Image (cartoon, rainbow, N blue to C red):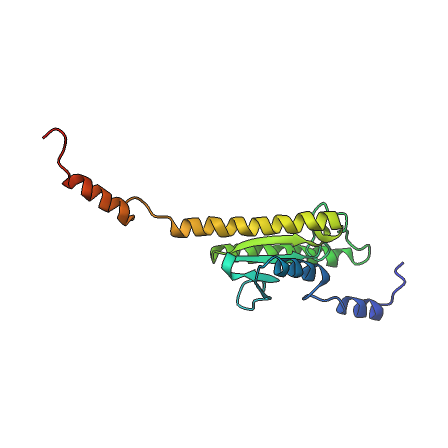
Length: 173
């Protein structure tokens, strides 16, 4: 049997924060130290992402393994009491997460999820954060390549070179 009373359990659960959590602060400190600038908890984007990098057109969600039901994670297990409530709550959270990420994708945003368990040990944290930085740089370069690429028809230098060639006398004449 659970040794805590209903009032104590309510007080414990009410004390759990949804913003500025320790895992979120780890990611934010890393990004800031690496020169990435961001906004936090943007109210106009679906799901109010934890970190918004407008320059990279990317949002980052830092999810707790318990609250978001991280599959195959050793830190996620359902409580033994009130199991039906927790199963439905976590399933609703997962459905909401998926809906928010789909809405963000429709708006043209890249979405990255960092799980709490990926930040637990120092070795895993370093690998995850370095991978995050590499992914952000890759997104930035890929988006810029699309934005600034010119086709041969749109390239004025190619047109000028082609018109100069047509003005030159052909070797057969």
